[in-house]
Amino acid sequence: MPITLYYAPWSPPARAILLLIKELGLNVELKKVDVMGGETRTEEFLKMNPQHTIPTLDDNGFCLWESRAILAYLVEAYFNGHNLYPTIPRERANINRVLHHDLTSFYENTIRQIVPILRRETTVFSEEMKSSIHEALKKLELFLVRNDWFAGENLTIADISLVPTIAALVSFGINLSSYPRLAEWFKNCKVLKGFEDDQVFAQEIAGYFKTLVTEGL
Image (cartoon, rainbow, N blue to C red; front, side, top):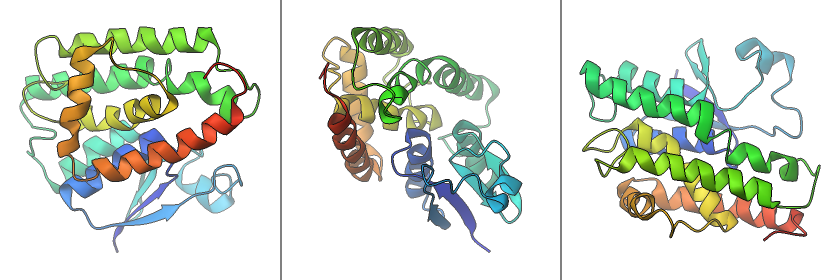
């Protein structure tokens, strides 16, 4: 049986898994989930993932959620030793450091900021939201002071995890010109096999986002 990925194309964490799948050429069955329609809260889905989140991976009965964990698992399980997640402890530690920052700080202070708009709780893209996003970008760029990639001299799953979020922010109208290292990194990410497809997804959700905003764009 093939690996199955439950995903939604508007989800940056889910799109990170799609990027890795294309980069590695993995055979994965993709199942699009209607989150707003309640498809992550069915009895069947909750058996796989009681936290009812996406992406969720089912590898022949082994179910895993949290995109950064999935990224690491897929490389370790099917391409162990690959440069995207090398086995050298110090190199892996640098990758994990970025992944943890993405999960606990960067994603929370960027995409999470605009969730109230996507949930139609507000129609204002406020200065407070923008300030949080720019502060997060400022901190993120510090990871690129010594290297062109986030965890060293080569592209890794740390970069793959960040690409869809940055793509979404750029599509929402956030300008990277104040972050030259970050802007250059984003250009370099075009080497990813799924980069252009991810841009399409980012633009689609940005188009929807902009229909919900009455002030602040």
